Amino acid sequence: MKSVLNVFVAISMLFASFDVRAEKIGQVHGLDINLLGMPSRIRLENETEVELKNGEFLTVRSPCEVSHFVGGGFGWHVDHYVPPTVLKIMPRTFDCVLTQASLPAPSRRCKRKESDKSIVLIQPQYPHGGRRQVYLPTGVLNLGSRLTQAGAEVDFIDLNRTEFRDSLEVMKHSDVIGITVLGPPYIPEVIETIWRIRQAGLTQPVMVGGQGVSLLKDQSNFGKWFDGLGVVQIRTAQDIAGCCGIAPEKIPSEYEASIVPMLEKMPAEELRAYLTKEFPLFLSQGCAFNCAFCAADKAKKERYRTSESLVEEVRWICKYLASIEHKYLQAYLSNLDGLQTPKDFEEKLTLVKEICEEHGIVPHLRCLATSRCTFKACQKDSGLPKRLNECGLEVVGFGADGADEEVWVRQNKTHNSMSELQAAANAMENAGITVEFLMVFGFQDDNIKTLWRDFKFSLREAWRGRVIRPYLAKSQTPAGRWQIDDPLVKAMVTDPTLLSRLDYAMIGSVQTHPKFFHRMTANGAYLALIGLLAPFGKCPTRPLVPVPKGFGRSIAYLINRFMPFDK
Ligand code: B12
Ligand code: SF4
Image 1 (spheres, rainbow, N blue to C red):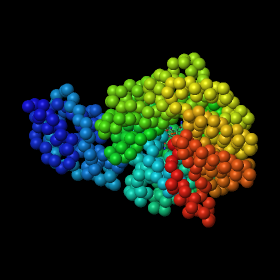
Image 2: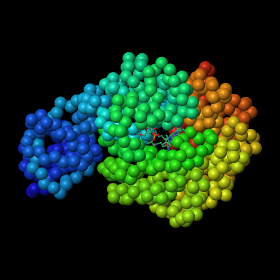
Image 3: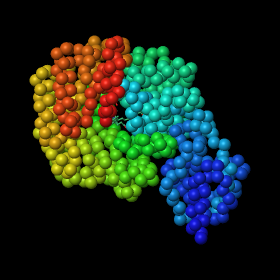
Image 4: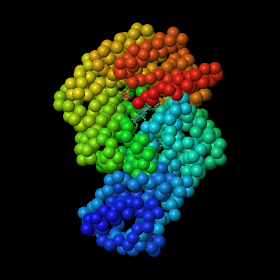
């Protein structure tokens, strides 16, 4: 009888925010009324308000109201709340008296200010063809969690999911607006977004951060591109602190933060959209090598995030996936070279696997790696690939990038060797891991001979069962090789809309491949590879086309609109 009452109470509590008046309740078991990270707010008779975070409990002995936080970063909201399907009844007993008189739910559009600073972080729309790419923006969510931990009230808007005009209200109520730039192709889109924000009459400071702007070789470019928009370029945690008016020591580093505080604020349908397909899982940052064309956080020792932050994040995600009966966790690991620090890599993947197992979830993981470090790691420990595969590692992408020793020397990629590339690929395949070769080719100084060698290599490797990811090299890129005297660089500094042409999936244009014959041959090889391999499922890359200013604009726009996203 008692257990029936408990279940009744549990259900009443979960539905409590739906205008249901609950009866006076006697003794009940403690309930995880916060399951799935939807915090609950209890308002007691004496007007005291208590907020419960995931997994926290409260003994209530007087009448109270219960409301749930449903997210989107917009505040307390009741209407759209979908009760979680999993209900946990904890084995502890509490005295609990609950009455429900329905809190006046503050709307998403009119949030309550609970901390000194309110910040809204924005993921811009996908930059090509007016499309919307819904892909968990781990970087900006990681930042959001850091700021939340520092005491700010952080909202998040993904312009791939929310219309610009619908997000203005939230922006209006924020002290600072932050926009993320993943890479150079996003810069024109971000400039346009900020311009629209200013057009709408919003005057708050806008901070622009993310790897697309924080690692610029020539810092003066930022000022030129964002001139007159009232923005602050963010490169360091100090810059963030300064712009948000938060003491720097209050902001934890990205390595200590989990994205859980931001996930907790998301509405159910947003969580589902992001987490039931592949999402980026932050494990480490940094690569010890220094390839000339690469714009990543390179030439520095790889650094891993803390196990605590990883466990918190993965556990929350697994719990969520289990609750919606989704059986897989599909992640793209952030490592620039997964096998650079093999001990840490295995340790983190083991944690991921263990947590997944606890929740009946199967991990499907992919990462990038260098053949050098993979070869070395496998030589030292031949059982490593098998163990990684058992942890869920299913795909490894090696940067073959030209697959040509002459090109490797020019690109300072001499850690690659043909024999090690093959040995590393074989070691992975023998352990059941799919091998992908990333083929960045068509650099400015490539010639017909090197292009032909790249082409032959790709076909041969695809024939052997490997997946080829061709990309068209962009010899100048703002955070990589960026020679200020180069006319291409000068043109892009003057006209930032050209930066969208730096997308690796885009065919070469006059702005990236100025020599006619070189452009034709490089584009020809790129398109031919995709055309030959894609029908056999051996090439996931799809070409984007540059959008010209005049005639042809609509056609190019349309082509890009229908191109599958590059992941
Ligand atoms: C996952 C991923 C993706 C995902 C998208 C991820 C997403 N939306 O967040 C996908 C697969 C879609 C993707 C696409 C691309 N990517 Co990518 N991607 C990555 C990867 C592997 C992990 C990113 C990550 O989660 N990092 C971990 C988080 C914690 O770090 P973070 O993102 O840098 O965020 C921190 C800071 O930058 C900062 N920050 C971030 N945003 C903001 C915003 C504000 C306001 C502030 C203040 C601070 C701030 O705070 C965060 C920490 O708290 C990185 C490699 C890497 N190791 O970072 C490459 C990387 C970021 N990608 C890169 C590039 C170039 C691209 C493409 C442009 C490639 C292309 N096709 O040309 C495309 C994007 C265009 C397109 N067509 O989609 C480059 C960027 C280089 C550069 N400096 O410009 C990287 C470094 C890869 C590389 N080897 O060069 N990518
Ligand atoms: S291309 Fe790969 S190996 Fe080279 S510096 Fe960049 S991340 Fe490191």
